[in-house]
Length: 213
Image 1 (cartoon, one colour):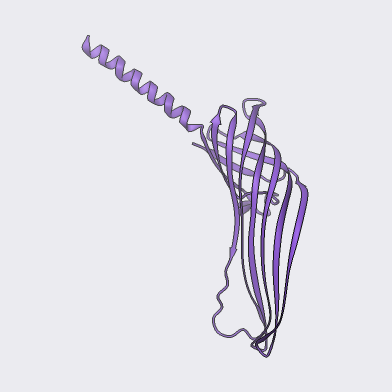
Image 2: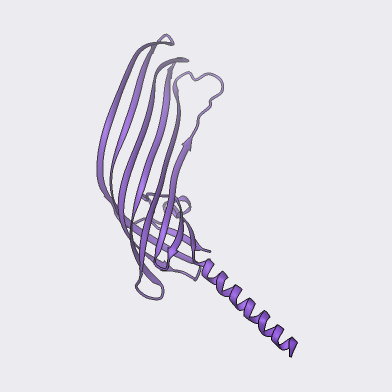
């Protein structure tokens, strides 16, 4: 009798743990823009993020964390006779929320909104006959709000593909400094600031893959 009761208790405990694990499996989604591996095969450009993590906070609600970045650092050795030395950094983080609705067993559509940041910095120097002739330093900072709508297709229980369209409205500040050189010595400096307001749409042609865990 004791063995039977113990067996029932063990089975009930295992079932409870499995049910908890199953619930946890659907709370996290991590995905990427397929452009980074399928560029030229699938039209996946124009996306606001490269990597994204989603956390399900309710049955049909998720918090979104995304980021895209591009890093190009140049450190030449020797002498540049005629050419350009250029470096750049671009980072675009985002945080948002989405609401999901089931269409069918495999199809879900969702709507939401992202708040996106834009940070960039670039510099380049031109050389002629081994002597620096000009340089430019540029930095930009911006903040954007982006309502969005998308649809996703369940490839399997853990894997799904998604695409989304969005409207982006935002403000950014760009600072530029141009310098000229004569015989390698700085001669003039031209500094200016540009304030930009922008609004535009991105059609739903990005293809993203997400894994659920």
